[in-house]
Image (cartoon, rainbow, N blue to C red; front, top):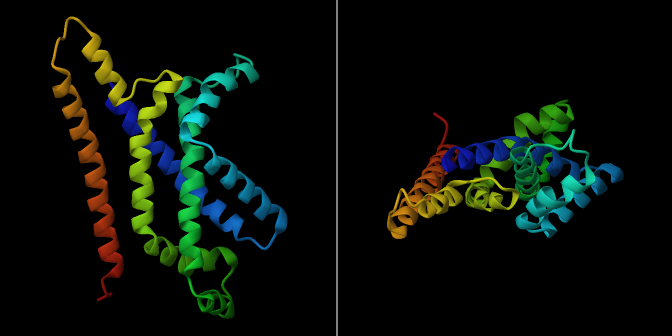
Length: 209
């Protein structure tokens, strides 16, 4: 039962966090001081905290601050924590890609009359994301492994379910087999995603026919 929790949290946190990370990266490079300041504060404050600290706040502090009627379920609390964490870290990776784009690309897009949204969507962001595919891959793999920390909010992920199974007297099994099986699943997830990202990078570098 822990594998679906691990997969759902990973997919949702990264799937929701990636678009948010793009907006945060653009906001941090904005010429508007207020937007740039707010984005910078969010990113730096989130990155200054360990994920375990954010999960602890979601598990212990949030129930103290919100009425029970509007308190999110522990699954959603863990998801929000992972989403915020992923957004902050992915935004800095994407910002690094944006900074690597030559200034002439921006000037050329403006010269042909593209709006800011068209310039970013058609010229800048595709190049920036291609540049940082290895760094994005590393960050996402770290997120996959970090889902094991959701035990703090009372969720049973893959590792927690393995420990619970070992504690069941009706299913006695050597612990090494259980942990090797869990390791194999994490290896398949991380290695499979790294191969997928490597293929994307190779396709991005391949000359157009």
